[in-house]
Length: 319
Image 1 (cartoon, rainbow, N blue to C red):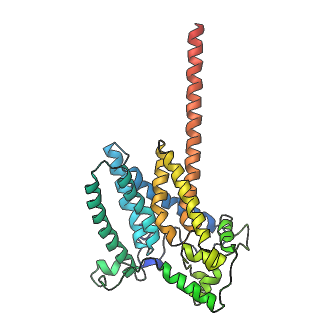
Image 2 (tube, rainbow, N blue to C red):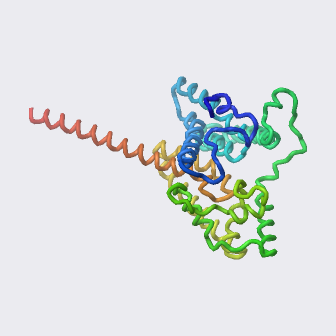
Image 3 (tube, rainbow, N blue to C red):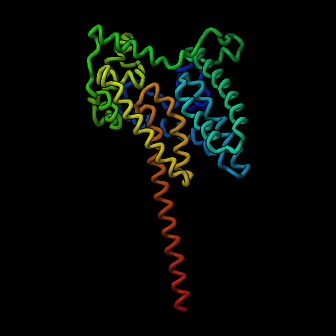
């Protein structure tokens, strides 16, 4: 970023501008470090919105709120809806699950939050190719005719079926999911690492080639790999595994770390409708590793404390 802190925290120019953790569509060299840092950064920013509901000290809440004000705008101004939702939705989920407000208060606040999110999504759609600076300067306005159209997953499924009928798309037989599993290996170690959904990306955006990442939808990805009959079964199994993982975290909610991880996972679940991909789930994977590491440190601390207390107790008994 050439030390441009303003551009890093409040990116101008939309999704094509210089941003934190940006890299090419196909990673090279040490790009995996940049990607890993970006996913961990997203996890940390999402945790700001979760932990603020559990903090009791006023000073801690103020510091956390300042961190949200500093870090969240970059996700909104980056021009990608899914990353902003992944950071902000966990905070809403935390409020719904942990607040002691009456149900009708939660319902009223939820309606208000829906309209706020709807407006923010319109800002992203209107200015993601040009940047939002013109809006603040009064040279551009939000076009009310522009609509979200959801995440266009049904449309992608229509494209996939049409490509199959035209014999342009071949069954992957699970190779896309294999490419997802290989995504964890840096490309400098495995130069021939398969590209995720390359054939479909090339058909949908032939001018962009591998620079375009087209989300096929969680059903569409299954159809691409196993056909129209068996295809929907694959994402159903994956969603079942994901639901089981979240349910296990919920049963372990006595741990604040596990509860926070559950709430973050719940917040990014809607993005899985775009595609069941590690590109969405990496923050949770890194988060789970970090939580296990922190729990291990805590166990060591408690064992050391217990051993120290036992030593003093034995000495006092002998005395």
